Length: 401
Image (cartoon, rainbow, N blue to C red; front, side, top):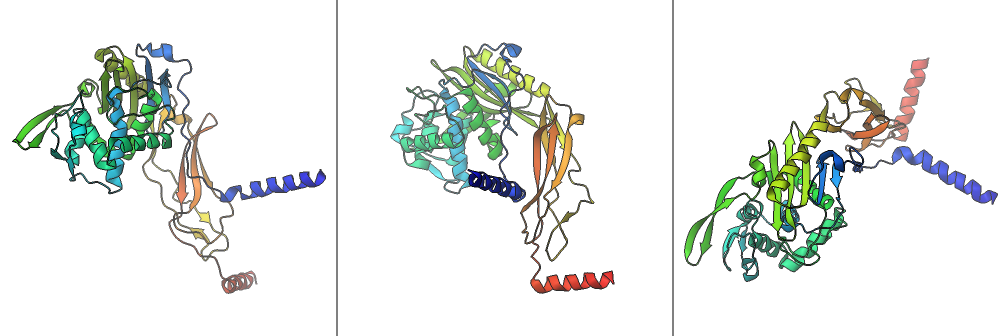
């Protein structure tokens, strides 16, 4: 028994002593709400809603946010996310030609009236999906990327799981009514955040009010006008997108994004009885969020005289990458109450390599960590050789004499 206790103590001491060398690059998302039991704050009529701050993922308001409901064309946010990820990894380009299949051309609901065999560029297909909410365009892109809509839907569900969208199940790429095609307001906010923060170019499409494409068929060419289904763009100051949806069963849905003074918010509405209620309540959510959010800007993150020592290195101090444009969002918090602490890792020992984490700047509010920025080495520092160590000791000895 005593031997087991001794082993346990040794293990704990080993963990404690090694903490300094363990650095995690992951920052947990704060999902706490601004105010508990806050459904009465806004008295929303819609069946489900959520408000998220895009930079941190912090939830500012929620109502039935985890109830699985039909998303209608808001589904296309995931379709667009996979399209932009395919663009990023080089598997497709904006100039690629997409050929519309009979299956894609047969989609009902909102569409751009493509004919089987018609060809369009990826760029124009994205416009058709985002601006006109074309079901045919969404399915054509799904087939272009994955070979079939079925395989693409599998990719959608896999990506949803990777993002932690555990209450989502996609059945198609466009949002047409289908049994078990369900998601939640929280999951919609999650995929919306992934799209707008990792692929800001989506704004080049989501903010288009009117545009057009050219149909190219065997009968010749004809212009087809695109009008944005998201009328909220012209109703709310700072609106930047993102996607609307409607079916008779889903009712009116929307993921609304907006930016003001460097703060970006995502408001999701599901199951609104009318378009007017949906747009009004999205505006209420965003107003509520912007009223409580402040952009904190640290113009001097690191002092100019900061020195970070290195043990047993060819240099005594290491240079570091200066942190610039350090901004983060405060939610119902006063900037003057933020406490900053610079933590340089103790016993930093050579070798140290450029890009290694050598410290952290932490910001706290009421004793709680609210933001942090890592300090990275700007150079390599090799470890002293045995002979270099002897020379150093000899010089020190001479200096003492």
